[in-house]
Amino acid sequence: MPGARILVVEDNERNMKLFRDVLQARGYRTLEATTGGQAVEVATEHGPDLVLMDVQLPDIDGVEALRRLRANARTESIPVLALTAQAMQGDRERFLAAGFDGYISKPVDIVDLVDTVNRHCHGRDPVQPRR
Image (tube, rainbow, N blue to C red; front, side, top):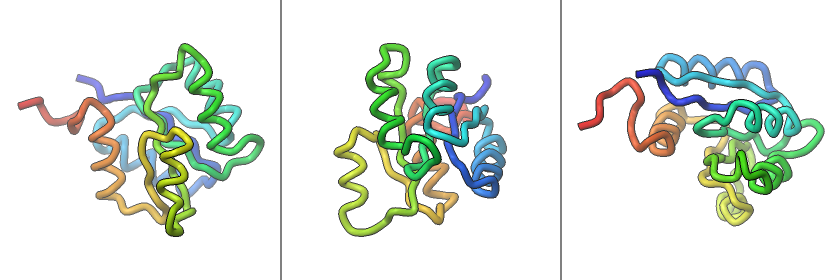
């Protein structure tokens, strides 16, 4: 069974490669965007199962991109996880209050990334059979 489709929104090329490689190695299919505007376009066109959204992006930031996704009937229910280097006390709560479904801080702990993605994509690892 093919893995869930995940839209990775990241403007740093090295981070994008890391996320893509980690997710694809675990059976996920990835879509990519490097700006908030592209994220909205790609999500609207392809309807991914999950979005990993960098918060600080060129053009519109991740919070505004999330607002636009939530305002669109085609994308309003897609889970969106904040992906950010903003890891000060209260940042997690602030992003969750803004409407993100989860929060992953940078630098990314790969185990945490995979666990969080697995939880949001059908509650399981896509390459493992459901028990």
